[in-house]
Each structure stands twice: as structure tokens, then as C-alpha cells.
Length: 258
Image 1: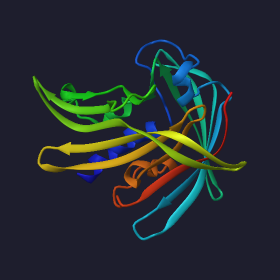
Image 2: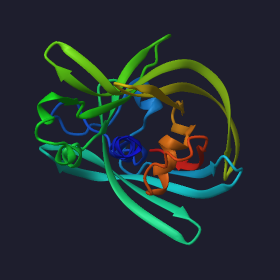
Image 3: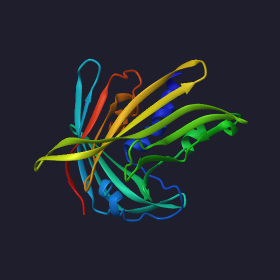
């Protein structure tokens, strides 16, 4: 059973961690404007550097950095996306990844390529599998008590549906946050978004993992924090379900927004 969960986690969170976003329609990428742009700038040349800090159940720590920049666009499966180039550094090891994102209306969609997952599903099961083709990660212009489904994967038998993976998000209000940037300290007010991922399978207890993102106007995402089962994919090493007590934090160090 652990291998099944590992597969689903890796497929889902590789898309999330490396910020590969996907639109709900066939339009190309557009520059974000108005209140939405304040929380998720998306112009070419926008640049972010985050520190990464991971603590496991024994108290051991791993640290590194992630640099992300927006540069150009790419057509993937008939849809034009903005490119994000991520560089992950841990000690002497560096990994560069190109991922994709798109802002549509008031929402930010992350791409999810389910091709590999479908190849691993037996043909006899495929007709009963339903998988969202996109991840609705943020709904901007935050409203009080707003919440939304990020992602769903389930088994459907006629009118009967069995949820396997559900990721739900909610806007938890604003809170003060201090940014310890390389050019000095900055006190800001951040919108707090909570994510809850539930894994369910008939005959097994439901497993739940959580994560949180903080967004600041005119900057974007300034912090991610969550369970290691979700965020160990930051290192490109997949998801380690053997130690679900691990926590990972990404904190903004510097940025440049046009």
C-alpha cells in the first residue's frame, strides 16, 4: 500500500513543488493586473530566492536554496504556458528544472501531467479513474472564508464515487509576517492559505497531511511550510513516506518584481 501512496504523491507533488501551472482553458499566458497581480506577479524577469530548511523526526536538518525566475513561454499539449526556471542547491549539488504556470482570471493553476500515471494504471481500471488535469492552487482577491478544491483523484462506478486523493485549500485570513531578506528586515501583512491533502482507500484509514503558504501584496509567495511527506520533493528526490514527522520550510530571501 505504501508504494501506491508513494506513486500518487510523486506524481502530484512534483508538479506542485516545482510550480508547474496549467490553465483551465486554451488561452495563452497574460500579465496579471489589479488586485490579483498584487498577490501573484507573473511578468518575465520576476525573480525569487528562497531558503529551504528540513527537519526530520530525529532532529536532523538539511538546508539549501531555491532560485526561481520567469522567462518566456512554451506550448505544451496545445496550451501556452509561462516558463519558470528553478535551481535547487544543497551543498555542492545543484539541480535545474523548467516548469510551467498560467494565471487565468482570479486563479493560479498548476499543471499536472497525468500521462505517466495513466501508463501505470491497468487498462481494466482506467475507465473508472477520474483525475483532475490541473491544480487550482490559489484563488486570488481573497474573500473571507473562501475555500476551493485544488485537486481530486477518484474511482467512479456509475453514480458511485470513491475519493482517493482530495486536496482542499482555504483562505485563513491575513496575519503579520516578518521577512528576513538579504537586504534587510521587512514587516508585511500576508494572506495565509492552508492546504489539506487527504488520502483515502477502501479498507484503510484516511491519512491527512497539511501545508501552508503565505502571500504578500506586490511580492507574491513569501513562505511555504508543511509536512515532509508533501515537501521533500523540493529536493527532487521524491516523497519519503517513511518519516511523516519531517517538516520543510521555504522562506523568501530576496526577490525582484517588475
